[in-house]
Image 1 (tube, rainbow, N blue to C red):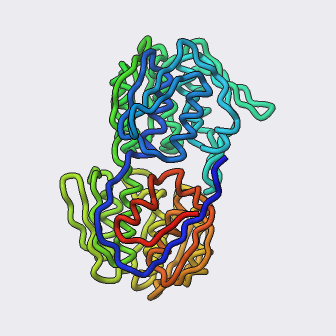
Image 2: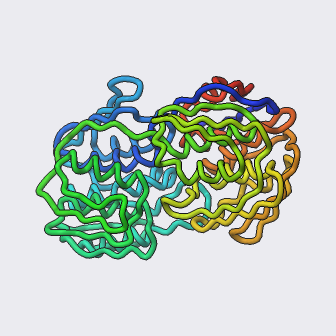
Image 3: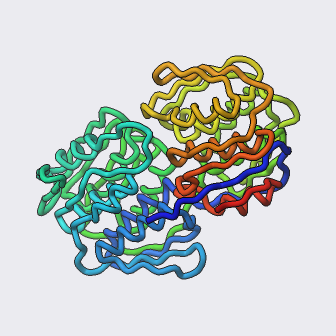
Length: 419
């Protein structure tokens, strides 16, 4: 069980310095799950030391894989000759990404038993797209007694049409199709960079996958997959969060170890607000000499503005000059942190998935509570700009996706402690 913790922040000072970005949470989790299909060890480098990685490690070990840290950020995964097929309910309820073991287990063992997954409380996220994808590949699915049982002696390639470009469903179907008989085509596939990374990883294991990054992914089934070495890409959401940390405090922050292409939608909105953005080959610097302008933001599947950046952007817009309109098109409950921002002095009105934000001159410190990962990050950002001291309770949510929050923030001048 995770330790309940709080972050205490003394805000109101411009931040300056450098932040090194860790490996991407949303890339490493599906890659770890896919490692179950290998017939020899997998070595993953630049793995972020975050709580969600710990949960996925527990999941892999519960299914029989041997996992060990070669050094601080290098993880070895050695699947056994025969995997277990029942994913522990506790881990599935703690992290939604645990459902990503279904495709690999079906591909490797022909069976997977799971319970409906949990994770961040940001609204309904049904796994219908996962179920339809596995069914299209020939899996028999039986639901009952709180379990979902997938079985198929050998999956068969198929044309799979996703009603929505779900990232998780795309990843699960890609994995399941790797050893299916024949060709699988995923239509309306998700285009996120993490999908491309999974394709690259699978191909290094001997799979035949092409088209990632477009809305049409083709997978040609092979007999089996082998181990490989892989380095995880930088986390674009973490990078965007620290860029906003510089902007919201009127600071000057250099973000290092990034892939600029992955940040384009976030950088475009920050530039639209009037901030000075300076790009390097693998770094980006934000200089916030003036108060940002109000803008409109709508979350969209990649390459649009990421839903995982919307709460952080709301914190920034609460201090912008003018009235901003923010629309969340992906999840129904992205605005749970808004009440706490209002308690800090923000002027925000929500109407369903729409937030109307009238910028204020200043926020004030108080006690707030994180309800999920990105809401927690948004409240930390607001506390950086607030006058006085802010306590962010339920800070363990933040540890799910951000590595060494205290160390990185202290490195750019934040007075922060955890308890």
